[in-house]
Length: 394
Image (cartoon, rainbow, N blue to C red):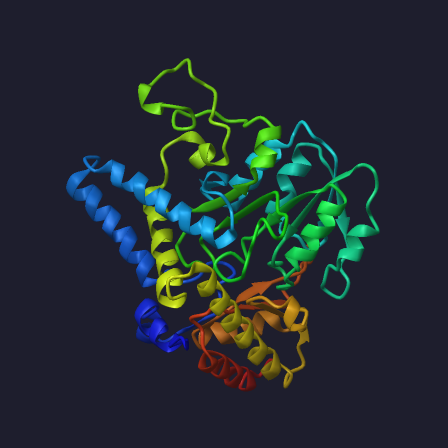
């Protein structure tokens, strides 16, 4: 089935045409799609009109959303909890594992959220240097010793867009009895993930970026195996059996990842129901009733668009930091130029929005990141390239 991407762009992301701008900020936050917006507005109208009269409906919808997510990543519904962001999911994970200290291996370009709390709690964290912007499994194998217990790795690196082969990483972790912790913030909603096939023990992400659902939604998967071996370090009124008995002596959370929804309290329904709109768009409109097929179609679309951008960038004197092989590719292309700040401002002046970045610990902003989602198109890229050709700072 051929997807009419322009029709989806026009109906789900009409602001692009209405306000005449080009949006490459998707690694920070995607535009909210119309389906997500509609569900959010529906919630607010319901609360304005009825308040808490129909609150059960919100909890029912929450479980429908959890089911679709479980279909996407191939998890049990009870293995998925809703957080407020990626950071909260990794924080709770670090505390769950806190009695099993051991050495952590992580990529040198890893996003700070992935590793901050583990360092703060005193885990021994070993940084693995990249190989031309990539992280082959051999780099981790070379650092293994009998104290190594964990690997923490983003599926897609926010810095340069490198996409790790989760299946190879998972096999490596399984063969060496390592707990595999994945930050999927820059891939969920855009790339295939299978926690069983890829032997992922913990996965944290949000719905802000590639799902286009707005702020306030974290997604946490923790396998039953991890939960059954460890204590759940929180207790809230909704995390226990029979919460509406209001028994303040009952402090034992249900032994499921799901019991940690919003750390055991009331969910952020507005944001979560917006996620439901995004999932419906991907599953039914893009995936023809199959969430995995929808994600596969989005993945191909994004990689095709980034291939086109990389091809066009060859005309310029940019250093391309993103690994160019298709197997490593995501929606992120990062380039380097000494005049990056002036170039970025010139693009912005022409209503082309990208992200100005710098190397960690550098004083100078010399990097520009283009993050392309499925609602971008070839014309966006062509206009950006034409604008760059007219930039006097190149």
